[in-house]
Image (cartoon, rainbow, N blue to C red):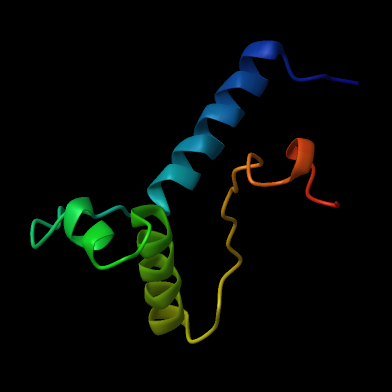
Amino acid sequence: FDLPTVDEHIAKANSHLNQLVGDHELNVQSFQGYGSNYIKKAGFSPDAYVQMAIQLATYRLWGQQGATYEATQMRPFLHGRTET
């Protein structure tokens, strides 16, 4: 039987990657209305503020809450452990 060569596998993978990339669109916008100092003065963490904005945009776009992850600092916990 005939096995594909490594070059054929690479060509197929490249074609598949190009298709995946072509299926997506990215539009970047830069918001200049206010910055992190304004958000801090309002009493919020800039990271948390942006995370909430992303969650709101996700909900408005797809009508449901998306999965999110926000890292935390371990310093406030005894010996850096969260289960204490």
